[in-house]
Length: 513
Image (cartoon, rainbow, N blue to C red):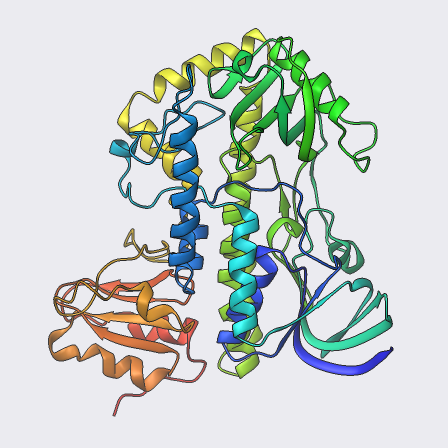
């Protein structure tokens, strides 16, 4: 049936992790949201097998820590079981290493400033299920099987047209967020520039039954004269998880299904081993196409996740990058829709997130460069491995890969301002309550170390979108809903607090009675 003249505040296109989290953030901020998804059911194609700390923390702030813990425990159990096989060496949760750079598993926990903020083996399908459960609990409408066919911007809104099995539909909204992936149709319809580097190689990910899996040992990343392959356990006892990087070129048809014969041919050529693929489960292919939208906002259309940036998947950075986009954008757009802030606040979304994506694209290009099967790349790879023995270098690469080096430029000389804060105990000696516990409803937090919590009166007079919590020792911190520290000061100082409140939470002047 035709659905004409429907109205909502925000339409999110795409019901993957980024789109669902964006919808959750907006709803917690009081916005009315409809999610449109082209697929009739969640995709079963193998995707990300892990998530970085900033992505998992965004989910933790929205109540998903227990579910992530369950998935992680099963993943570690699978790894330990697999490690019992002859010749298999798997680094589990007790390993001194945490992550890799270009397949060099040398990032050490003891070199990191915050080793507890680490990547987690929580797969994308599980994350989508967790987010979908929260979306349902919040009553957010998700319309599946809706393929968007038109986007028309007007001064005060956006007209979105789609087609589904039940007919055509049209919806008017104030804002449209494109979370529809690297080939985003919304990005193209809205006219965003998407510059970058063309593809030069092909990546494969698959779950397959192999006749002689022992020939592919050792576990982990293996660089050969034909490319790179990684081999490890899967949830299916008879199958193995494969990741292959083929430098021989790009596929003739990226849309063609990945076949058993294709996986077998590439695996034999890259590994140099006589192995057969007896059966193929899930499989996907992609290229090293690397692109970044020039801006994340075009009028009333916004981009998030892979719709805004695409890059190679080394280090599992893409999923966390997109979730952090959603966390940054959602509360800001909700504040504008409530009338608390002018829509110029939304411009800070591109200003803050674009440089972060730029850095990720740069490091993934660098990783591909030193994985190539040529002597020059090999020499640079050996040099990087040697440099990573130094703690400072190891820490720098570790923070780059985890995203913990992220710092938005907010104009403060204090290093912590602009950084995304991790979870920590708060309150007067009550170790059972943490910062993320009090952020579940989508509000920001003011941690007040001033005498008698005097600074909280300034915050309370400015906005109801912050929860004030007295703490035993400083510094005092103004923390946005996306966990960004927007202001900090020692002792009883409130210098700059009112300006920070006006910038992020209150469009009207702050007055204290």
